[in-house]
Length: 131
Image (cartoon, rainbow, N blue to C red; front, side, top):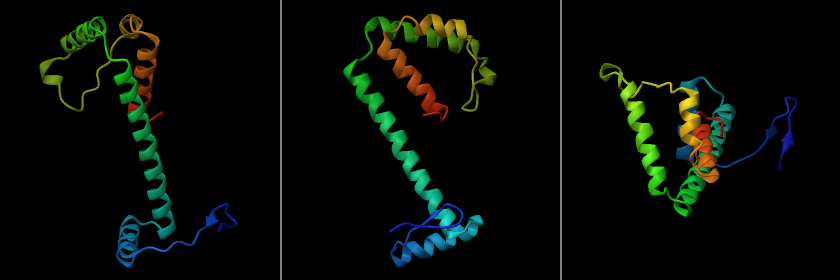
């Protein structure tokens, strides 16, 4: 099954359909990677994508179990309006990252129940690639 190599990697024999093997060879060569490095990268990316999908499913499930109350929705709308007021029209585009004072975030987020705070924290970690 696994046969360790000198560099700590495990040798794994797999069979691929011929058309997929041709694509792997073509893509790995175009990227300047060995076949093994390309496949390892694809496996890592697949595992990471599955982990991200699990986090999103958990977030959606938690949100459905505990939807926003009218009060929380009002708080979110007020925070969004304040944030939008800080953006100059010429500066708003999809590449803009807005900085919001930590105090303002703490004031707003502090009004949310614990499970919502955890959901916000999880969403931020996910967006920053920390989850």
